[in-house]
Length: 87
Image (cartoon, rainbow, N blue to C red):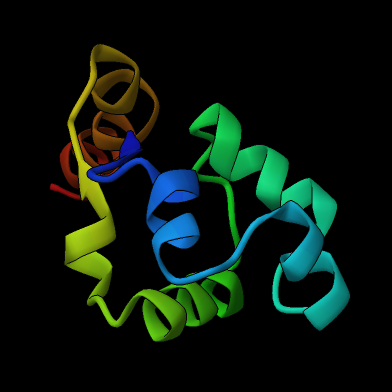
C-alpha cells in the first residue's frame, strides 16, 4: 500500500498553491486536490511528476510503500502460486 510521507496540501500551500491556483493554472485538477486532501495515493505518474516538480522533491520524499496483509494476499500470493505451479 502506498502512503504519503508528507501532508501534501500544506506542502503545496508553502509554495503558494491552493485549490484555486491549482485549478486556474491547470497543474492539478479538483479531483487530484481532493485525493491529496484525503490521502488517496491513486494518482498518475504524470501527477506525481508535477508534484515532484512544484515541491522540488523526489518521489521517495513524497510516498512510501507499506506492505499490508491485503498486499500479501492479493499480490505476493499470486507470485508464489505461479512459482509453485512452474516447478
